[in-house]
Amino acid sequence: MKNQSRCLCVILPNNTELSLTVGLKDRGQDVFEQLFERLGTSDLTFFGLSVVKDSQPLFLDLGHKLSLYLPKSWRKNTSKEKVILSLKVQYFVENVQLILNRDTRQLYYAEVKGRVLRSECFEQEGLYFQLAAYALQADLGDCEENFAYFSPQGFFPFWIVQKHGNDYILKHTPALHRELKGMSSSEAASLFIQEAFTLSDVPLTIYRLSKEKKKTQGCVLVGVTSTGLQISEVLNGKVYDFPWPSIHSITFQGRKFDIRADGLFEKKLVLYSLSVLHAKNLLQHVRNSHRLHLNIKPLVMKLKEKNGRHREMYITDGADLVFEDSDDDDELPPMKFLVDNIQKQTTGTTESKTVTGSGASNGACCLEMSVDEPEEMLVDDPEDVLRLIELVEGVSVDGPLLLPISHWEGENRKVWGETNQIS
Image (cartoon, rainbow, N blue to C red; front, top):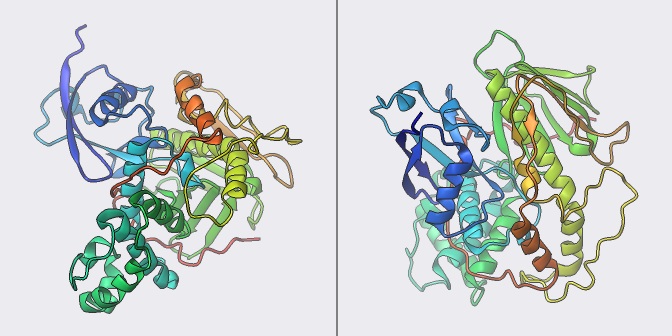
C-alpha cells in the first residue's frame, strides 16, 4: 500500500513552528530525520517528541508509527485542526558540558529558560534574580545603560513580577547583569542551565497517575529526574524523593505501576496510569533515564574534578580523565553505551525486562516491565560516541548558545515545594 502523505507541525523549544510532511506509515524516527535536516544538526540525543494524548502529554517511542499516537482524523486525513508534536528535553544531564553540539545547546537552553519562567520554588526567590542576570547576558550581551532594556515577563516567573512589580525588577536586576560584563553568551547560558537545575521543579518531567484503578483524573504526580523519581500525592500532600539507589524495583503490568523503595511506610506504592500506552511509555522513560544516569556518572565526576571552581566551560587536557575500573558490576561503560541506549525502542509480545542499578543498600535497583509489547535495542551511534570521546580529549565546548522553552501543560502548578525525602 502506498505510504500516503500527511502534514503535522513540530514546535521547537524556542517556540518556532516547523511544518513537516510525513508518510502515514512513518515512525517517530522519520520525524527526527527531517528535524536533523531542517535544524542542521545530527544530535538531538537528549530530546524527544511529545504529544498530548487523552489530555495527557507523553513522549513518542521513535520506533513506533506516528499513527499510534495521533488522532484518527489525522490518519483519515479529515482533521481540520493542526496536528502538533513538540520537541522537548526528555533527558536532563547533570553537567552542561555533556551537551556537545552547539545547536543542541541552543535548544536545551531555550527549554530550560522556559521551565524557569514556569518554576514556583518560592523559597529560592533570590536565585531567580541571578538566573535572570545570566539569561540577560546570554540573550542580550553586556548590560545597557537603559532603564527598560528588557521585559521582566521574559526573564522572571509571573509570581515574582506580580509580587515586586516591573519597576522594582528593572531597578535592581541591571546591577546583577553588570557584574557579568565581558562574559560570553555561551558561558552565561551554561551557568544559567547549571544553576537552574538547582530548582526542584525544573529538571524533571511530570506524569499524572492515580492511586485508584477506576479514577481517570490523576491525583499523583510522578516526576522523572536524572537522579531518580519525585512523587507527590496531591490530596494528602505526601512527597517522596527516591534517588535511583533507594529504588528496589519499578514494575508495570497493564496500567498498574508498582514502586518498591526505601522509605515507604507500606511495602510498595501502587499507582495507575491512564492507559497501557501511557504506562509503557512512562516505564521506558524511567528505564532510559536511569541507564543514562549510570552511563554518564563517571564522566560527570571527572568533569567536576577537571573544572573545579573555574567558570570557563572547556576541557584543555583529557589526559587525566581516564576512567578507573569500577568494582560495581552495575556501572556500565560510560562511552560505549551513552547515546543510543537511552533511546531503546519497544515492540512485540508480553515479557519482563530488568535493568540493574547502582548503590542500592538492599539490592540493586531494577525496573521490570510487563506490558503488551517487548522491546528492541538499537546499537550505539558511532558519531555520538566519538563526540563524547572528543570532549574528554580536549575539544572546547565554549561556543555561542542562544535561546528558550517547553513544559507539560496543566502540570505547571508544582507541588514539590520543599521536597522531603521519606526515610
